[in-house]
Figure 1 (tube, one colour):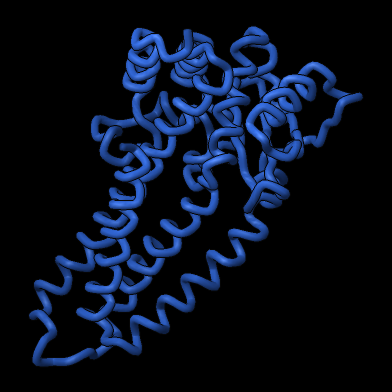
Figure 2: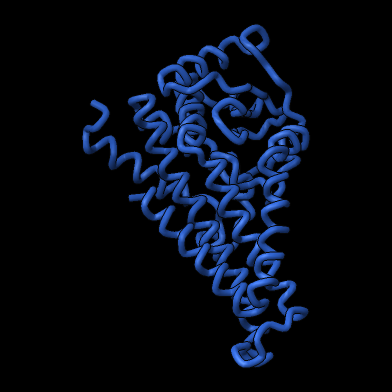
Length: 282
C-alpha cells in the first residue's frame, strides 16, 4: 500500500509540474526549466553523498576500526542480499543515522557516535536494518526523482513573471501570483508525503529483516526522546529527510505533520506494534 501511495504521489507531482509549466511558461519555457532542474539534480545524485559526509565530518571505518558495527552491517547486508555498504561514523553525541549513495555499489551507511553509545546492540541492528531497507528499495533514487520535479516546479514559479506564454490561455496577473505561491507549496507537501511513505516502508523492511519489530520500536523512542532535547551541531533542513529521526524534532512547529519529512514516532511505533501483534515475525 505504501509503495502504491508513493508512486501515485510521484505521478501526481509529475502531472502537476507539466500542467504548471505549460500554464505559466509555455512548452519551451517548461523544457528549459526542466533541463536546468535535471542538471542540478544530476549533480546532486552523483556527488551529494560526498558533500553530506564532508558536511557532517563523517569518518570512514572498517572491520578493524569498528569491528562490532561492521559485523552487524555485514550480517544484515548478506541477509538482505546487498553488497556491503561503506561505513562512516559521525563525531556527534546526538544519536542518529542515515543512508546515502546512488545505488547498491555506492551505498553508504553513517551513524553518529551518540547512537552507538545510547542504543543496545539489538537496537543498533534495527537501525542498520532500517537504513539497509532504504538502500534495498532504491529510496535515494526515488528521492532524487521527486526532488527534481519539485525543484522544477519551484523554478518555474520563480520564472513565471518573465515568461510570456499564450496570452489567451494565461490567467490574469492576480491568479498567476496566487498560483506561483501555492504550486511550490503543493509540490513540497507531495514531496514530504513521499518521504514519509518511504520511512514507513523502511520501518517494515527493518522489522522483517531482523524479525524483531520491538527492537526498532525501542530504538525509535530513544532517538526521538533525545532529538527533542538536542539538535545535531551540523544539522541542516536540506538533509533532514535522510536521517532515521528528523534532527529538528525538538524545533517542529504546530503544522509539523504537514511539512515534516518524517511521520511522527508515535505513528511509526504504532505500525510496528501492529506488525508484532499480527504475529508475522513469530
